[in-house]
Image (cartoon, rainbow, N blue to C red; front, side, top):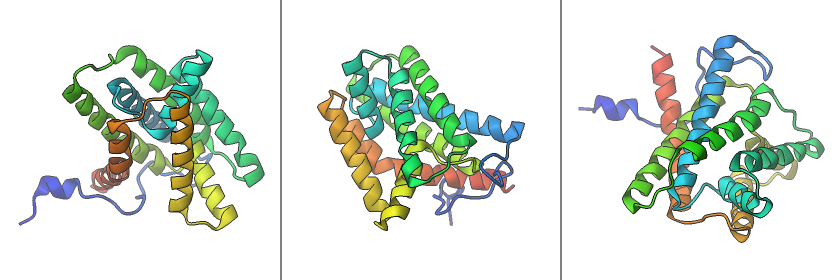
Length: 221
């Protein structure tokens, strides 16, 4: 006999169609944009929880933290600047942004800055791990919401898919190369790498898949 709760949390293998899924990257409506903004904001707050856990950041936050320390700017501005630079790399790859792409750059940066301002840094290891796991769950849920809007990929995802199309290299290898390079550069600049980084790498895919499943089952009723 199946467990209803476990069935509800069953991962989804594809991106589901939802009532707010757009027909194009600039197909805007108030409900759709509201879901997009909410998802991106939850994503940014989750990333901030990872940062404030102090036991290791997601790879791109490792880079943002390293740049933030070297340039003496806030995490929000560092995240915004890096996302903008990544978006500029789309130009030679002939990738076109959508409304969701531009929103991703702005709202996640704002949410991260708000999060690191209101969430305390953690000294207790067990509380830090709990914050890290909560952050990964929030990033996964936020990702599921903004992905299902269909308004364009974030700058990093767009770079990944563009390089895959241009090079013919498997998308998993492209993602690994990007994330590994970003992580190494961020670590060299002084970003925090640790248990949280490992947990993020191991769990973020499953977190997004479970969240997509939850969104699919909730919206199909």
